[in-house]
Image 1 (cartoon, rainbow, N blue to C red):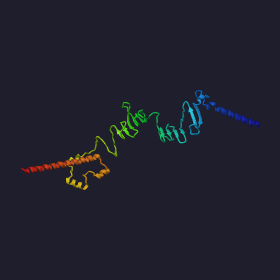
Image 2 (cartoon, rainbow, N blue to C red):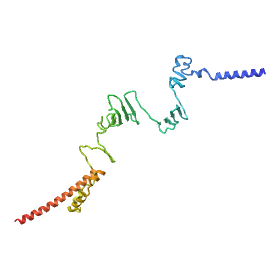
Image 3 (cartoon, one colour):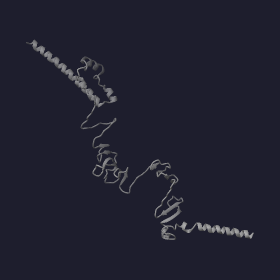
Image 4 (cartoon, one colour):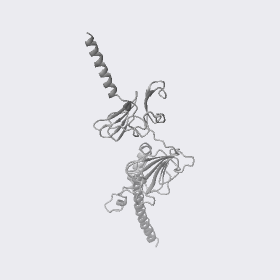
Length: 295
């Protein structure tokens, strides 16, 4: 019995010695840093430590890590996933980063709101490969960029290799080619609209050019059927407006196409010109007859 007891004590002692050999002080205190210079060096404790603490965690215990030379996480054939109670920072095997998503489909995929802020009065967000393709947020008191949001695009042919394209100032005014904008939309240069534009207010302009074909010169063709004045008179009495011209109620309800309306008015002016020419011929004929009778 004593032999068995001594053998058991010897076996446990051997296991204890082996365990102490496996878990060395060098592994525990990270003595491989700077050729073991950090081992038992009190000055290095603030630079290299891994511990648990409840400071800064709202009273809960968390992991506190400090590493002077930096921290590198390397997953050579998998992903990296840092998770808190309600949030996630996920790095996929292909290098895509997801914030609050573990299935990012682009290089930075954010499920939620994002905020960009600089330490100065201006925040520059560079988009694309060119350094001058920027969105600039101006929060300065000087309003160097006009305040609000300022859009700058790269242009190799420009003097500074960029063009200040558009600004949305702090009042919500939009300026294209002009800074500061004086109205909700202030454009310095030509504009082109390839679809309908609706304006629920007045339009003030120095000049308006309407390009529309065909014109009303067809009235002067020999085969044009000029309406008889009696028919025009009858139509006006019955409908209270000119033939081929919309009524006032229709214009109020559906509006007026300026280009088409101008051509229609020109058509009526040309018809009126033909009536005047015809009347002038009749007057000249009557004058001739009267002059002959008076001889």
